[in-house]
Length: 427
Image 1 (tube, rainbow, N blue to C red):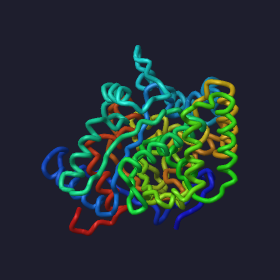
Image 2: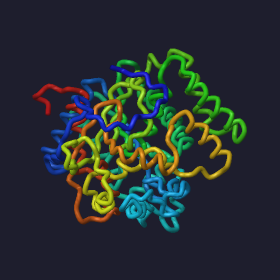
Image 3: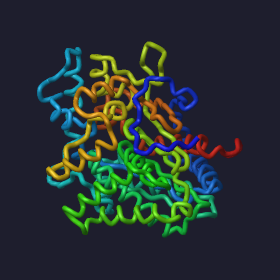
Protein backbone atom coordinates (compact mmCIF):
# COMPACT_ATOMS: atom_id res chain seq x y z
CA UNK A 1 0.00 0.00 0.00
CA UNK A 2 1.18 3.59 -0.63
CA UNK A 3 2.74 5.15 2.43
CA UNK A 4 2.91 8.78 3.48
CA UNK A 5 6.45 9.35 4.71
CA UNK A 6 6.66 13.12 5.29
CA UNK A 7 10.48 13.22 5.11
CA UNK A 8 11.06 10.51 7.72
CA UNK A 9 14.47 8.87 7.46
CA UNK A 10 14.72 5.18 6.59
CA UNK A 11 15.14 2.87 9.56
CA UNK A 12 18.23 0.69 9.68
CA UNK A 13 16.65 -2.64 10.44
CA UNK A 14 18.18 -6.11 10.36
CA UNK A 15 14.73 -7.69 10.06
CA UNK A 16 14.01 -9.98 7.12
CA UNK A 17 12.25 -7.91 4.38
CA UNK A 18 10.29 -11.12 3.63
CA UNK A 19 7.99 -10.64 0.64
CA UNK A 20 9.65 -7.32 -0.27
CA UNK A 21 12.94 -8.91 -1.33
CA UNK A 22 14.02 -11.46 -3.90
CA UNK A 23 17.38 -12.84 -4.96
CA UNK A 24 18.95 -13.09 -8.40
CA UNK A 25 22.19 -14.06 -10.06
CA UNK A 26 23.15 -12.08 -13.14
CA UNK A 27 22.13 -13.86 -16.31
CA UNK A 28 23.50 -11.69 -19.12
CA UNK A 29 21.55 -13.59 -21.79
CA UNK A 30 22.30 -12.91 -25.43
CA UNK A 31 25.49 -11.11 -26.45
CA UNK A 32 25.04 -7.31 -26.62
CA UNK A 33 24.03 -6.07 -30.07
CA UNK A 34 23.30 -9.59 -31.31
CA UNK A 35 19.93 -10.16 -33.06
CA UNK A 36 18.60 -12.14 -30.07
CA UNK A 37 19.66 -9.40 -27.66
CA UNK A 38 17.96 -6.70 -29.73
CA UNK A 39 14.84 -8.81 -30.08
CA UNK A 40 14.47 -9.27 -26.30
CA UNK A 41 14.90 -5.56 -25.68
CA UNK A 42 12.39 -4.75 -28.42
CA UNK A 43 9.84 -7.03 -26.74
CA UNK A 44 10.54 -5.29 -23.44
CA UNK A 45 9.95 -1.95 -25.14
CA UNK A 46 6.59 -3.16 -26.42
CA UNK A 47 5.55 -4.13 -22.90
CA UNK A 48 6.64 -0.78 -21.47
CA UNK A 49 4.67 1.14 -24.09
CA UNK A 50 1.64 -1.11 -23.63
CA UNK A 51 1.71 -0.28 -19.90
CA UNK A 52 1.73 3.45 -20.61
CA UNK A 53 5.45 4.22 -20.23
CA UNK A 54 6.32 7.04 -22.63
CA UNK A 55 9.70 8.17 -21.30
CA UNK A 56 12.73 6.63 -19.60
CA UNK A 57 15.08 8.99 -17.78
CA UNK A 58 18.44 7.70 -16.53
CA UNK A 59 19.70 9.82 -13.62
CA UNK A 60 23.33 9.48 -12.56
CA UNK A 61 26.23 11.36 -11.02
CA UNK A 62 29.97 11.52 -11.50
CA UNK A 63 32.55 10.01 -9.16
CA UNK A 64 35.50 12.14 -10.35
CA UNK A 65 36.30 14.56 -7.57
CA UNK A 66 33.40 13.32 -5.48
CA UNK A 67 33.42 11.48 -2.17
CA UNK A 68 31.68 8.14 -2.67
CA UNK A 69 32.09 7.06 0.95
CA UNK A 70 31.93 10.46 2.64
CA UNK A 71 35.45 10.06 4.00
CA UNK A 72 35.86 13.84 4.31
CA UNK A 73 32.93 13.98 6.72
CA UNK A 74 34.31 11.10 8.72
CA UNK A 75 37.68 12.86 8.79
CA UNK A 76 36.03 16.02 10.07
CA UNK A 77 34.16 13.98 12.66
CA UNK A 78 37.44 12.51 13.90
CA UNK A 79 37.13 9.03 12.40
CA UNK A 80 40.00 8.97 9.95
CA UNK A 81 42.49 11.69 10.79
CA UNK A 82 42.77 10.60 14.40
CA UNK A 83 42.60 6.92 13.60
CA UNK A 84 39.60 6.68 15.89
CA UNK A 85 38.60 3.03 16.14
CA UNK A 86 36.63 2.53 19.35
CA UNK A 87 38.84 -0.48 19.98
CA UNK A 88 37.32 -2.43 17.08
CA UNK A 89 39.98 -4.56 15.37
CA UNK A 90 40.40 -3.81 11.69
CA UNK A 91 38.37 -0.59 11.68
CA UNK A 92 41.34 1.63 10.91
CA UNK A 93 42.17 -0.60 7.95
CA UNK A 94 38.61 -0.23 6.70
CA UNK A 95 38.60 3.54 7.16
CA UNK A 96 41.87 3.78 5.25
CA UNK A 97 40.28 1.90 2.36
CA UNK A 98 37.49 4.48 2.19
CA UNK A 99 39.84 7.38 1.52
CA UNK A 100 39.65 8.68 -2.02
CA UNK A 101 41.87 6.85 -4.46
CA UNK A 102 43.26 8.15 -7.78
CA UNK A 103 40.04 7.13 -9.56
CA UNK A 104 38.00 9.48 -7.35
CA UNK A 105 40.24 12.53 -7.76
CA UNK A 106 39.37 15.45 -10.05
CA UNK A 107 40.77 14.93 -13.52
CA UNK A 108 44.12 16.71 -13.71
CA UNK A 109 43.94 19.85 -15.81
CA UNK A 110 40.25 19.30 -16.55
CA UNK A 111 38.66 21.29 -13.73
CA UNK A 112 36.34 18.32 -13.45
CA UNK A 113 34.74 18.28 -10.00
CA UNK A 114 31.29 18.85 -8.45
CA UNK A 115 28.96 20.58 -8.94
CA UNK A 116 28.46 19.10 -12.40
CA UNK A 117 26.27 20.66 -15.05
CA UNK A 118 23.73 18.66 -17.00
CA UNK A 119 25.04 19.71 -20.42
CA UNK A 120 26.37 17.82 -23.41
CA UNK A 121 29.96 19.05 -23.04
CA UNK A 122 30.20 17.69 -19.49
CA UNK A 123 28.61 14.40 -20.53
CA UNK A 124 31.00 13.99 -23.45
CA UNK A 125 33.97 14.64 -21.15
CA UNK A 126 32.63 12.14 -18.64
CA UNK A 127 32.10 9.53 -21.35
CA UNK A 128 35.68 9.96 -22.52
CA UNK A 129 37.18 9.43 -19.08
CA UNK A 130 34.75 7.09 -17.30
CA UNK A 131 33.28 5.05 -20.13
CA UNK A 132 30.79 2.60 -18.60
CA UNK A 133 32.25 2.76 -15.08
CA UNK A 134 29.47 4.21 -12.95
CA UNK A 135 28.36 6.25 -15.96
CA UNK A 136 25.37 6.02 -18.29
CA UNK A 137 27.30 6.79 -21.46
CA UNK A 138 25.93 8.34 -24.61
CA UNK A 139 26.42 4.99 -26.33
CA UNK A 140 24.40 3.26 -23.58
CA UNK A 141 21.47 5.64 -23.93
CA UNK A 142 21.51 5.52 -27.73
CA UNK A 143 21.57 1.71 -27.68
CA UNK A 144 18.67 1.65 -25.23
CA UNK A 145 16.68 4.08 -27.34
CA UNK A 146 17.22 2.16 -30.57
CA UNK A 147 16.51 -1.30 -29.18
CA UNK A 148 13.47 -0.53 -27.02
CA UNK A 149 11.66 1.34 -29.79
CA UNK A 150 12.73 -0.84 -32.73
CA UNK A 151 9.36 -2.55 -33.16
CA UNK A 152 7.09 -0.13 -31.35
CA UNK A 153 4.70 2.19 -33.15
CA UNK A 154 4.35 4.51 -30.14
CA UNK A 155 7.16 6.85 -29.14
CA UNK A 156 9.36 5.91 -26.17
CA UNK A 157 11.80 8.66 -25.27
CA UNK A 158 15.11 7.69 -23.62
CA UNK A 159 17.38 10.36 -22.15
CA UNK A 160 19.95 10.83 -19.41
CA UNK A 161 20.28 13.41 -16.67
CA UNK A 162 23.55 14.19 -14.87
CA UNK A 163 22.91 15.52 -11.38
CA UNK A 164 25.31 17.86 -9.60
CA UNK A 165 26.90 15.10 -7.43
CA UNK A 166 27.07 17.47 -4.46
CA UNK A 167 26.82 15.04 -1.56
CA UNK A 168 25.11 16.90 1.25
CA UNK A 169 21.50 17.68 2.15
CA UNK A 170 21.45 21.12 0.53
CA UNK A 171 23.09 19.79 -2.64
CA UNK A 172 20.64 16.90 -2.94
CA UNK A 173 17.65 19.14 -2.18
CA UNK A 174 18.67 21.52 -4.95
CA UNK A 175 19.20 18.52 -7.22
CA UNK A 176 15.66 17.32 -6.44
CA UNK A 177 14.28 20.74 -7.38
CA UNK A 178 16.26 20.70 -10.64
CA UNK A 179 15.06 17.18 -11.42
CA UNK A 180 11.46 18.24 -10.80
CA UNK A 181 11.98 21.01 -13.36
CA UNK A 182 13.44 18.48 -15.83
CA UNK A 183 10.45 16.18 -15.41
CA UNK A 184 8.02 19.03 -15.88
CA UNK A 185 9.78 20.03 -19.09
CA UNK A 186 9.64 16.42 -20.25
CA UNK A 187 5.93 16.28 -19.51
CA UNK A 188 5.33 19.45 -21.55
CA UNK A 189 7.52 18.39 -24.47
CA UNK A 190 5.89 14.97 -24.80
CA UNK A 191 2.35 16.17 -23.92
CA UNK A 192 2.12 13.64 -21.09
CA UNK A 193 -0.89 13.37 -18.81
CA UNK A 194 -2.24 11.17 -16.02
CA UNK A 195 -2.71 8.28 -18.43
CA UNK A 196 1.04 7.99 -19.03
CA UNK A 197 4.01 6.81 -17.01
CA UNK A 198 7.62 8.01 -16.76
CA UNK A 199 10.26 5.47 -15.72
CA UNK A 200 13.20 7.03 -13.86
CA UNK A 201 16.26 4.84 -13.30
CA UNK A 202 18.69 6.35 -10.77
CA UNK A 203 22.22 5.11 -10.17
CA UNK A 204 23.83 5.29 -6.74
CA UNK A 205 23.49 8.54 -4.83
CA UNK A 206 21.11 9.85 -7.49
CA UNK A 207 18.55 7.60 -5.82
CA UNK A 208 18.72 9.90 -2.77
CA UNK A 209 17.60 12.75 -5.00
CA UNK A 210 14.57 10.70 -6.09
CA UNK A 211 13.76 9.78 -2.48
CA UNK A 212 13.69 13.48 -1.58
CA UNK A 213 11.59 14.24 -4.64
CA UNK A 214 9.06 11.58 -3.65
CA UNK A 215 8.50 13.49 -0.40
CA UNK A 216 8.46 16.91 -2.07
CA UNK A 217 5.77 16.24 -4.68
CA UNK A 218 3.12 14.61 -2.49
CA UNK A 219 -0.19 16.52 -2.77
CA UNK A 220 -1.73 17.97 0.34
CA UNK A 221 -0.40 19.83 3.35
CA UNK A 222 2.90 19.05 5.06
CA UNK A 223 4.28 21.12 7.93
CA UNK A 224 7.75 19.64 7.43
CA UNK A 225 7.75 20.51 3.72
CA UNK A 226 6.58 24.03 4.57
CA UNK A 227 9.49 24.46 7.00
CA UNK A 228 11.93 23.12 4.39
CA UNK A 229 10.54 25.53 1.79
CA UNK A 230 10.83 28.45 4.22
CA UNK A 231 14.40 27.50 5.07
CA UNK A 232 15.38 27.35 1.41
CA UNK A 233 13.50 30.53 0.49
CA UNK A 234 15.22 32.49 3.26
CA UNK A 235 18.59 31.13 2.13
CA UNK A 236 18.05 32.19 -1.50
CA UNK A 237 16.70 35.60 -0.51
CA UNK A 238 19.85 36.21 1.54
CA UNK A 239 22.31 34.92 -1.03
CA UNK A 240 20.90 35.00 -4.57
CA UNK A 241 17.23 35.81 -5.20
CA UNK A 242 17.88 35.24 -8.92
CA UNK A 243 19.11 31.69 -8.30
CA UNK A 244 17.71 29.12 -10.69
CA UNK A 245 17.12 26.86 -7.68
CA UNK A 246 14.90 29.55 -6.15
CA UNK A 247 12.81 29.66 -9.33
CA UNK A 248 12.55 25.85 -9.29
CA UNK A 249 11.39 26.04 -5.65
CA UNK A 250 8.72 28.58 -6.60
CA UNK A 251 7.61 26.38 -9.51
CA UNK A 252 7.23 23.39 -7.19
CA UNK A 253 5.27 25.49 -4.69
CA UNK A 254 2.96 26.57 -7.52
CA UNK A 255 2.61 22.94 -8.67
CA UNK A 256 1.52 21.87 -5.19
CA UNK A 257 -0.95 24.71 -4.76
CA UNK A 258 -2.92 23.70 -7.87
CA UNK A 259 -4.40 20.46 -9.16
CA UNK A 260 -1.51 20.02 -11.59
CA UNK A 261 -0.34 16.85 -9.84
CA UNK A 262 -3.60 15.12 -10.76
CA UNK A 263 -2.81 15.73 -14.44
CA UNK A 264 0.76 14.47 -14.24
CA UNK A 265 2.06 11.07 -15.44
CA UNK A 266 2.80 8.40 -12.85
CA UNK A 267 6.44 8.41 -11.76
CA UNK A 268 7.91 4.88 -11.59
CA UNK A 269 11.34 4.74 -9.94
CA UNK A 270 14.14 2.17 -10.09
CA UNK A 271 17.31 2.64 -8.03
CA UNK A 272 20.64 0.96 -8.72
CA UNK A 273 22.96 0.60 -5.74
CA UNK A 274 21.46 3.48 -3.76
CA UNK A 275 22.58 3.55 -0.09
CA UNK A 276 19.78 3.43 2.48
CA UNK A 277 19.21 6.95 3.79
CA UNK A 278 16.14 9.10 3.09
CA UNK A 279 12.74 7.49 3.37
CA UNK A 280 10.41 7.18 0.40
CA UNK A 281 6.92 8.63 0.21
CA UNK A 282 5.15 6.12 -2.01
CA UNK A 283 1.79 7.90 -1.89
CA UNK A 284 2.88 10.40 -4.53
CA UNK A 285 4.73 8.14 -6.96
CA UNK A 286 3.96 5.02 -8.97
CA UNK A 287 6.07 1.88 -8.71
CA UNK A 288 9.33 1.54 -6.76
CA UNK A 289 12.09 -1.05 -7.28
CA UNK A 290 15.65 -1.31 -5.96
CA UNK A 291 18.60 -3.26 -7.41
CA UNK A 292 21.58 -3.95 -5.14
CA UNK A 293 24.78 -5.76 -6.10
CA UNK A 294 24.97 -8.29 -3.26
CA UNK A 295 26.63 -11.59 -2.55
CA UNK A 296 25.36 -13.32 0.62
CA UNK A 297 28.66 -14.26 2.26
CA UNK A 298 27.43 -14.32 5.85
CA UNK A 299 27.57 -17.60 7.75
CA UNK A 300 24.38 -17.08 9.77
CA UNK A 301 21.87 -17.64 6.97
CA UNK A 302 20.66 -14.03 6.94
CA UNK A 303 21.31 -13.51 3.27
CA UNK A 304 19.40 -10.22 3.10
CA UNK A 305 22.12 -8.55 5.23
CA UNK A 306 25.47 -7.25 4.09
CA UNK A 307 28.58 -8.46 5.88
CA UNK A 308 30.00 -5.96 8.31
CA UNK A 309 32.18 -8.09 10.56
CA UNK A 310 35.58 -6.60 11.18
CA UNK A 311 38.37 -6.87 10.21
CA UNK A 312 37.33 -9.16 7.33
CA UNK A 313 35.28 -6.54 5.54
CA UNK A 314 38.34 -4.32 5.10
CA UNK A 315 40.00 -7.08 3.08
CA UNK A 316 36.87 -7.60 0.97
CA UNK A 317 36.29 -4.00 -0.09
CA UNK A 318 39.04 -3.63 -2.72
CA UNK A 319 37.81 -6.72 -4.62
CA UNK A 320 34.07 -6.19 -4.03
CA UNK A 321 33.79 -9.65 -2.52
CA UNK A 322 30.44 -8.94 -0.86
CA UNK A 323 28.95 -6.81 -3.61
CA UNK A 324 28.40 -3.05 -3.64
CA UNK A 325 30.33 -1.50 -0.75
CA UNK A 326 29.31 2.05 -1.68
CA UNK A 327 25.68 1.03 -1.17
CA UNK A 328 26.63 -0.63 2.12
CA UNK A 329 28.92 1.99 3.66
CA UNK A 330 27.85 5.42 2.30
CA UNK A 331 24.94 5.69 4.73
CA UNK A 332 23.92 8.41 7.19
CA UNK A 333 26.82 10.53 8.41
CA UNK A 334 28.91 10.38 5.23
CA UNK A 335 28.12 13.70 3.59
CA UNK A 336 30.61 16.08 2.04
CA UNK A 337 31.14 19.40 3.79
CA UNK A 338 29.48 22.53 2.36
CA UNK A 339 32.03 25.11 1.28
CA UNK A 340 30.66 28.28 2.92
CA UNK A 341 29.46 29.03 6.43
CA UNK A 342 25.96 29.99 5.29
CA UNK A 343 25.68 26.76 3.29
CA UNK A 344 26.78 24.86 6.38
CA UNK A 345 24.08 26.57 8.43
CA UNK A 346 21.37 25.76 5.88
CA UNK A 347 22.64 22.22 5.50
CA UNK A 348 22.50 21.75 9.27
CA UNK A 349 18.93 23.09 9.33
CA UNK A 350 17.93 20.64 6.60
CA UNK A 351 19.60 17.77 8.44
CA UNK A 352 17.31 18.47 11.41
CA UNK A 353 14.36 17.65 9.12
CA UNK A 354 15.89 14.85 7.05
CA UNK A 355 18.41 12.78 8.99
CA UNK A 356 18.71 12.15 12.73
CA UNK A 357 22.21 10.66 12.43
CA UNK A 358 25.48 12.59 12.37
CA UNK A 359 29.04 12.06 13.47
CA UNK A 360 31.42 9.15 13.38
CA UNK A 361 29.82 7.07 16.12
CA UNK A 362 26.37 7.35 14.55
CA UNK A 363 27.81 6.35 11.14
CA UNK A 364 29.41 3.32 12.76
CA UNK A 365 26.12 2.47 14.45
CA UNK A 366 24.22 2.67 11.16
CA UNK A 367 26.72 0.84 9.00
CA UNK A 368 27.08 -2.10 11.39
CA UNK A 369 23.40 -2.85 10.99
CA UNK A 370 24.32 -3.96 7.47
CA UNK A 371 20.99 -2.98 5.90
CA UNK A 372 20.68 -3.66 2.16
CA UNK A 373 16.97 -3.08 1.45
CA UNK A 374 15.18 0.26 1.95
CA UNK A 375 12.00 0.29 4.05
CA UNK A 376 9.81 0.85 1.00
CA UNK A 377 9.52 -0.63 -2.45
CA UNK A 378 10.55 -4.03 -3.78
CA UNK A 379 14.23 -4.99 -3.57
CA UNK A 380 16.25 -7.32 -5.80
CA UNK A 381 19.54 -8.48 -4.30
CA UNK A 382 21.59 -9.50 -7.31
CA UNK A 383 24.94 -11.23 -7.55
CA UNK A 384 26.38 -9.33 -10.50
CA UNK A 385 29.42 -11.64 -10.43
CA UNK A 386 31.86 -8.75 -10.61
CA UNK A 387 34.12 -9.80 -7.73
CA UNK A 388 37.70 -10.68 -8.62
CA UNK A 389 41.18 -9.33 -8.98
CA UNK A 390 40.32 -6.10 -10.81
CA UNK A 391 41.01 -2.81 -9.04
CA UNK A 392 38.47 -0.35 -7.60
CA UNK A 393 39.18 1.80 -10.64
CA UNK A 394 37.38 -0.86 -12.69
CA UNK A 395 34.50 -1.82 -10.40
CA UNK A 396 34.20 1.19 -8.03
CA UNK A 397 33.99 -1.12 -5.01
CA UNK A 398 31.16 -3.09 -6.65
CA UNK A 399 29.27 0.07 -7.63
CA UNK A 400 30.00 0.15 -11.39
CA UNK A 401 28.18 -2.98 -12.58
CA UNK A 402 24.78 -1.36 -13.06
CA UNK A 403 25.76 0.97 -15.92
CA UNK A 404 27.41 -1.52 -18.28
CA UNK A 405 25.77 -2.67 -21.50
CA UNK A 406 26.47 -6.26 -20.44
CA UNK A 407 23.89 -5.86 -17.66
CA UNK A 408 21.39 -3.78 -19.65
CA UNK A 409 19.24 -6.67 -20.89
CA UNK A 410 19.17 -8.35 -17.47
CA UNK A 411 18.06 -5.17 -15.70
CA UNK A 412 15.44 -4.21 -18.29
CA UNK A 413 14.06 -7.76 -18.19
CA UNK A 414 13.81 -7.65 -14.39
CA UNK A 415 12.21 -4.19 -14.42
CA UNK A 416 9.57 -5.30 -16.90
CA UNK A 417 8.86 -8.61 -15.17
CA UNK A 418 8.75 -7.09 -11.67
CA UNK A 419 6.93 -3.82 -12.27
CA UNK A 420 4.84 -4.31 -15.36
CA UNK A 421 3.91 -8.02 -15.28
CA UNK A 422 3.97 -8.81 -19.00
CA UNK A 423 2.26 -11.86 -20.48
CA UNK A 424 4.39 -14.98 -20.27
CA UNK A 425 4.81 -15.01 -24.04
CA UNK A 426 6.53 -11.63 -24.09
CA UNK A 427 9.80 -12.35 -22.29
